[in-house]
Each structure stands twice: as structure tokens, then as C-alpha cells.
Length: 559
Image 1: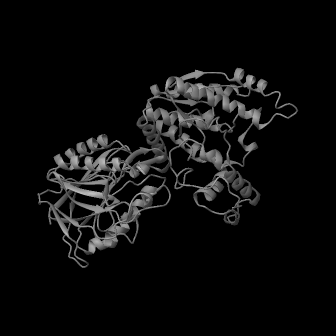
Image 2: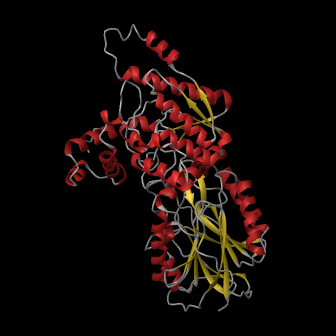
Image 3: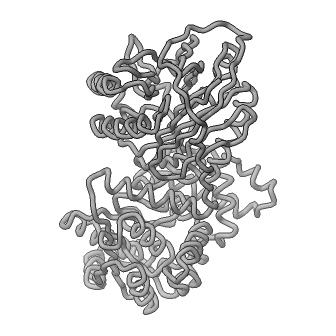
């Protein structure tokens, strides 16, 4: 059996940009053809971008997507292109077209539709119950699958192998979260060894709303070993020569579609395995990519951040600078009567280290004006949280007004620990267009800052910011620990209750303090209404607030 030269085109595509997505695929196709590839695989729903959500309910959108596929197919030659697209044929299917010689030669329809976590495919698509054809490409029998078809042990890969498939191509739009790459490699190794066939896996890359796709396309051999892997979070064309031994049919005979003839290859297209990023830098890169793509794909060029002198705003400023360039980031310092001198100087040092522009807009005049206006309705009442939050709301108004006037996108700075328990001011520090670290727990915020400095080989985020006790600085000598458990206690409870869906009893059984567990759980449940109004942000955990976790606001279940 000669070598089969395969290519995986992991691309950063944009939902709804049918023309732009097609142009990017054609460019990658030309590169693959010039490299002598027998086939090049593109991601799931590559024509439309993923996830297109309710655009799929519009017949015009689906029709234009199919027209775009036809234009792409018309440009193909000997190299086969495997392209994800929505196919309307009575029902709507999540399909993969195999194109060559100027036409669509065959179609595979997705069998298994995910309807959990961030996925809603049963809302749009029908599953395909039958077997798809095998495609004879350069003498090899190639099976095609789409994403979830490979994730399940009951998917079609084993049957395809028993029917004579010698290579399985799996096209994906698999969102990132921390640890996902290892899960994928283990899953693909199980599918390959179970079926006894190599697997070519291609994944989407880039940010789409709160989702980030990390690429890391790969080729797994029939023993489960990784033969090649593309870089994470970047466009790449992975090309590899794969020796595919002939398999005998032991199961049902599937129809075959002839695609392209054999072409000799010398087996030299064997790229190295791109190293996987370490866990903390991997999360940082996901945050950078998610922020960059959200800003740029939504037509913004510049971002503005309220710099408080705290660690959260410092991390967001660093991420924004790496995503957009220092010339496109503005930090706004808005000191109040309660701001420490160190907060201002720390913000100035951070901005200088990052090379970003700054504005200083003291909020005292507006703060006092609000208090004066509220004197009568607040008469006889002790000052408290409402007065403190006026400061946050003044700052939010300033940032949103700058955005309104100058076209800057406001990046909010609240982390997952704060969002979980409602330690944030609605229409104040929650006001903005994108919440960069809303899925990053506080302890991970510290780790990301330290790692950013370590990788830079210099102090980017001032040590004084990292070392100072966290504080909202809305009243004299205020510290987070005055209102919340220590983050070393808080974050594990949040992880268990939110990400792992554990009950209060489960958490108490794990030796967490019962009173603290009940208090934290009550805060999480009580503040669902705030999170429902928060801007989207980058998803880096298995369960983020948003599409992942859909709980009622009105809810009396005690947990």
C-alpha cells in the first residue's frame, strides 16, 4: 500500500462569514494541493463557522451556505476536500461533503448530536441513522465522521472499520477548556485501537463569543500513538504521509465512492508533534485568543479597562495588551476618597510595563453628587453597601461613556470567584462588553499573573499588585476576606458546586466546613440574576457561567 498524504486544515473561521470562510478554505486547499496532499480535511461546519446557532433556522442562511460549498467544490482538483456544512435535504443535517474534480462526490451526515454543556445540536439537526459511504482516495478506503461520532464508543467508527475503512477522518469544532487536549488524545487513541485504524482529527481554532477552539489537530495511528500534532490556538496546515495497510471487510459492505487515483509519495511528509502548552500558559493563551477574536470579529479595534491597582484588572490589561497590542489598549484610573496611594502608583507602573495609554478621571465629584441627591430618601439610614456601590456605578458609567464616545470596547475585570458569589456591582464593575476572566477563579488569577511574569523574564505585573491583599476599596481598610471566605477555601467549594454539580451534602461530606458551604451555596444561587445580565467572557473551564449552566433565577430548591 503506498503512502496516503493527508492534511488537516485548522482554521480560524467566523460564524456567518460565508464568503470569508470559503476564501480561507480555498487558500488552505491550494496549499494542501501544492504539498501533494491526497486529501485535506476542514473543521465541522467550516462553511458557516461554529456554532451558527439560530442562524440555522433561517432557510436563506442554509441555502447560501450550500451555495458557498458548491463554489468551493468547483475549485477543487485531484486533492479531495472534506468540508463541514449544513445540508438541507428534507431535514437539516450536520454534514461533511467530499469534494474533488470540481464537484461534490459524496456526503456523510453526522450520526450523534451532542445536546449537553454548550451544545444544542438537537435543536437544529436530525441525526442520520444509516451508514455513510466509504470514499476511495488514492487507493485507500476512507471513512468520514463528524465530531461527536468519534467521542462515543457507540459511534460509527468501529462499524466503518469492520466494513473495510483504512482511515477515519474526524472533522471537529471541539471547544477548549483546561485539560481538554489530553481528553481528546485519550479518546482518539481508544477509537483508533478499538477499530484498528488510524484517525485524522481536524479541529477549529479561534474565538467565537465565549467559546475558544484550540486546534491541536492530529493524526493517531492504529496503535493509538500520536504521529503528528499541530500547534494549539493558531491556524495551521498539518501534512503527513500515512502508510495505510489494506484491511479486509468483516462487517457489512458499505457503498464506495471513487474520489482520486493513487499518486506515489515518498513518506517524507512527517511533521513533528507540536508540544502541548503547560496548563497555566495554555489557559492564558486561550484568554488571549478569545479576547482578540471577540474584539476584532465584532468590529472593534481598541479596548478600555478600569485599572484599580488590583490583580484582576492587571491580568485583564496584560491579556488585552497581548491580544490587541499596547497601542490598542487604554487603562483608566478612577480614584475615589477610599483609593490608596499604592493603587494609583501600582496602576501607573503596570501601564508603563505594558506600554499602554492611561487616563486619570477622579470620581469624587460624581460620587459626592450622587450622595447629595440621595440625602432625602436615605435620611435616617446608616451608610452601607448602597453607598459603596455608587462608586462602582460611577466608574461603570465613565467607562461606558468613553466607549460610547470613542468606540472603545469595555473589558470588565471580575473573576469567576466574584461572579459566583455576587461580589460585583450590577451596572458598576459588571458593566461592559466582554468579561475576560469571568471563568477564571481567583487562585488561577494569581497563577496566571506569576506565570506571565516568569515567561516574560521580567516584572510585567508589579509584584506589589500580586502580593497585596485583595480589596474592592469601596470603604476604609476594606479587604475581600471581610466579606468572603479566603479564596483557598472559597474556590474549591465553587468548583464543586458549580462545575461538578455537587450538592451541599456532597461538599459537607468532603470535609468542607458545613456553615461555609451553606453560605457559599446560598450566595451562588442568590446571584443568578446578576450573572444573567453579565457580558459574555472566555470559557476555560468544563462548566462556565452562561450557556454551560442554565439555572432558574427564581429557585427555592435548597441545594
